[in-house]
Image (cartoon, rainbow, N blue to C red; front, side, top):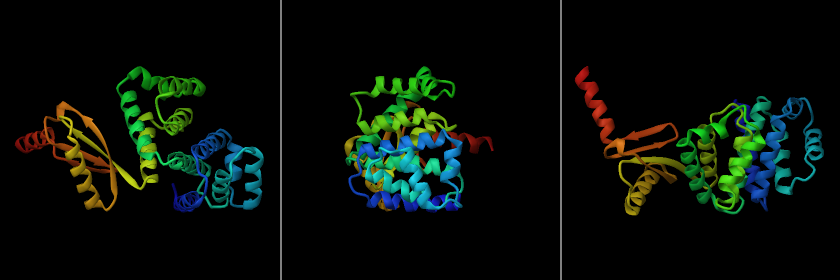
Length: 263
């Protein structure tokens, strides 16, 4: 996103955070708007056009999406009244707002974080499922049907809404990247960051608590730990959050040693 779009998104997030009666349905409405605007070049162009007065764009949103709740309508009014770098950035912004609203809707952000991570691991470990959900050629409605068959009645309604949206509207992104992005947004909505922790054997509850506390103290924010057990790391811990990686695994040390010996 350009600077203008980042500022517009910050303003819209503030509007969402101050809105009352935000529910999972609010998030679903915003995600539907994101998909609809993405599918219409004309609508994207109008809503991102600074030359068109904000009240006219707000009125257009009301006509195109007549069933919006008050919270979703207020957020979208802020969106179309702000300056965006381009239509694609506006679509991405509405999507992020929709995910945040879905996570905030009933306070179950931690459950959604865990389920998004678990589902992303399942998809990454099943080549056929990854192709079925990530293929650009697959019918979006069919992909949503797969999601419903896998998660319906088993996952939080917010998780299902977010995954359903992502597979319907990939916008050129790889499926793993989409899940990682959504998990980060959900975590941020709960005032946390996500750290992916890889170890050779499962961490005990005490070890998890100590690691989370150490990360929180060092980075001045709470962390949600997503745990991966991979015997190939041999021992130690690898922690990744955002673009930062702390690799203290035995496997990493052995690679460093080989490089030193070879050099």
